[in-house]
Each structure stands twice: as C-alpha cells, then as structure tokens.
Length: 226
Ligand SMILES: C[S@@+](CC[C@H](N)C(=O)[O-])C[C@H]1O[C@@H](n2cnc3c(N)ncnc32)[C@H](O)[C@@H]1O
Image (cartoon, rainbow, N blue to C red; front, side):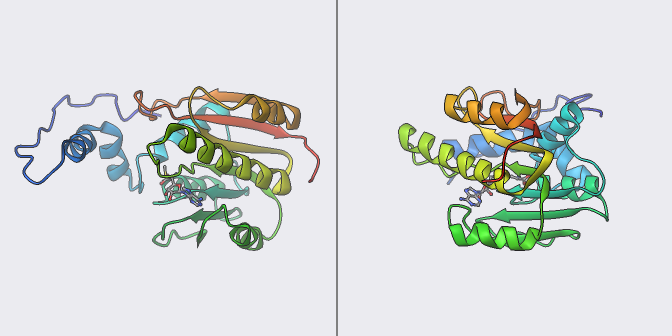
C-alpha cells in the first residue's frame, strides 16, 4: 500500500495565535494538522489515524481473512473496527468495545463499557456468541502521570485481554495488543510464547516515533481453554 507519508507536500501548518490555548494543546493541534496520517485517514474515511496501524500490521502479519470473527477492545472512535469490518466481509463478525460511546459502524456490534468490569466482559462474550479468530486490543488507559501506576494499569488491561483471548480464540487464532515500554513483561511474554506458535513485537510506521507504544502480535493459538 502507498504510505500516507509518500509524496507528502511538505507544507507545514503553523497556528497563528495561541490565545487561550495551552502550549500542550497548541502543540497537539499543530501536530494533528501537519500529520500525513491524519490527512490520509480523513481522505479514506477512517475515523482515526490509528486505522493505519492495523492496516500496516495486517500487511506484515496477514491478520485478517474473509469470514473471520473479530473482537476489537478499546475500539473508539472506531478506525480498527472499520478496517476489520471491511476485511472480514459480510460472512465475518466484528464486536467492538470501548469506555466511550461510538457512532454506528455498519457490520459491527458496538458495546460501551469498561473491560475491567467482569460483567462487561460477559456482554462481549454474549455479543460474540461463539469463538473468535482474532482478538485485538488497542486499549490504553488515561495516564495519571504516576509512572508506576500507569504501567500497572496498562499491564492489567493487556493481561485481561490475554485472558479473554484464551477463553475465545480458536486453535490457530491470533492476538494483537498495544504494549508499552519496550514490549511485553517477561511473565506475559512466556505465557504468550507457550500458547502461541509465533510472538512478535512490532512498531508500525503509523505509530508515532516519539511514543513508547508498540504492539505484540501473537499468532497460531495452541493454548488450552481456561
Ligand atoms: C488509542 S484508542 C483506540 C483507537 C482505536 N483503535 C481506533 O482505531 O479508533 C484507546 C481506547 O481504549 C479505550 N479504553 C481504555 N481503557 C479501557 C477499558 N478499561 N475498557 C474499554 N476501553 C478502554 C479508550 O477509551 C480509548 O478509546
């Protein structure tokens, strides 16, 4: 696929006035306005620039196939869900969950709730109504600014997503999750390596270089059902 950064015009938008804006929000806005992925997402009708991350991961790891059943955790505003719906087609099924409400995406079942809440996990299971071929998690908690707390919260979300994957994935299924700080924790990595034939860490080009975000891509599920 042509990358959104290919042939970028090199024009930089600078905001004329920062009146009433904090430096951080002005920087964010300038970055958005100058980001080729933001422009390309808008042009392609994707709800988020994050859509390109899953597109790039799919190009590298061949994640999607027509007819697959996919769960997308931390789905809002819906870029990954849109890509999943398009790639699994009419015979597939896509269930997306987020803390935040999402506008309808034709072809997907969208739920609102906190994945840390066991009742919400049950709702996702009910909506899925069967096994999954692919579990995606782009969940990222709001940071508190306290590094140790933030790290634990992120780890908890990844672990919950992985537990969920163990419950629903078919043999041969795949799990993709956002991880931070140089990859997956040792215990989690051992768990993944035991239960999946292949475990890779990847930073897709659409993931900002200055962000510690990366993804773990585990394929070929062979674990036992918990
Ligand atoms: C980076 S965004 C996801 C972007 C999405 N993949 C897309 O393509 O549009 C991370 C999302 O995770 C969600 N999230 C964080 N913690 C969550 C939780 N405990 N349960 C459900 N969603 C959660 C946030 O609300 C946020 O919308």
